[in-house]
Length: 98
Image (tube, rainbow, N blue to C red; front, side, top):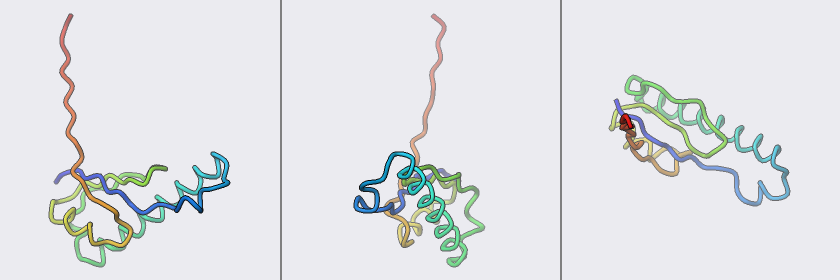
């Protein structure tokens, strides 16, 4: 299983215009939770839930991190709530003594 960054639809600029920072945060967070639920439902409807290990908690950004098989990641691009799917970068930290 690999981790993928899934970019989801977000509220339009018009919906966010005129809102203060706290209201924008609340709207963006609610949107991410809604999109996560939509994606979970879509995965189940496609019979792919056995190939999904984990869907991280959504953030206020329009991004979810999903640990799944490459097959699921490829199919996710067809879900209505999804804008794009990319493999998460792998980070390594090289610690050296100085």
